[in-house]
Length: 343
Image (cartoon, rainbow, N blue to C red; front, side, top):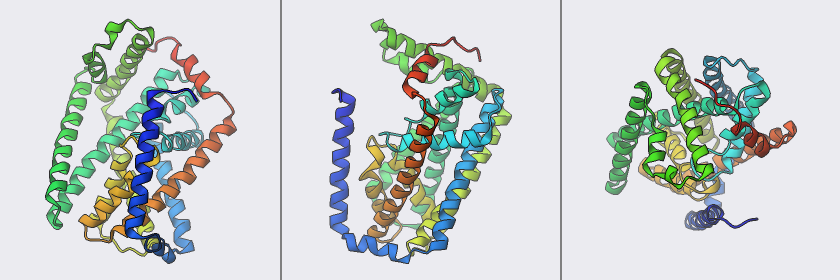
């Protein structure tokens, strides 16, 4: 494998994550963690798997609506498969799970959707999901702080993080709703275009193209935007059912606010630059469970269950990608150099 700074940092954070996982397991004891799995029920496991499939369907529905707003009608089952493939690649990608999006856009090329156009729909879908989840986390943190004694340091970090996140979300939608760029301004802030590097100049052009399509969606297709928000809220309702079943599988009886808080911490874990959120997911769940007054070992057990679920779906996604039998890298490269699509 060719050496690069990216590979170095991925490996570095992965090692840190493995060390953190080892320390957590050693602290709580593997037997105490595994003990929670003795409550497993076969029927609940089936219901858990079925709920996850429903969640994928709801998320695919949101993407389908965005695509239809751009005039693309694609078989729902195909989109469902593409969604799973994207999730599969994202699982193995460090950071906020953004590795599968180019693959999803490339797969849309099978249906005569230009790559830039397809990637813009995936980005719209991703941003709606991220911003909604972030806002719900802030709400969950506020509810928990009212009901539980949150450590001062944790309260400060959550408050600062919430303020910064809200500021970014407000600025982003303000720009979009006023026909203004957001990501392009960030790109140009670093003056990268001054390097005159062809790759960087091409990237700047693609960012502008994608963002123009996004601006049109947010500014001129508000009805569809509202539908996507409602579908996102529906996905959260399904997610609550999913994690209610998951915690019940572990013999845990958690209330609404507790469950809300735990789910949002799982969402935060994937923002860290660690492949598969190794160590981060476990540490996050330990913190969340401690804040709501539950055993940290139970949080580790839930983290392991979530990881196993994601890992199995990731394998399914990679198998589906292999079934389609095309070179993603070559397809993306070809699409990236295609003509510009006017929004």
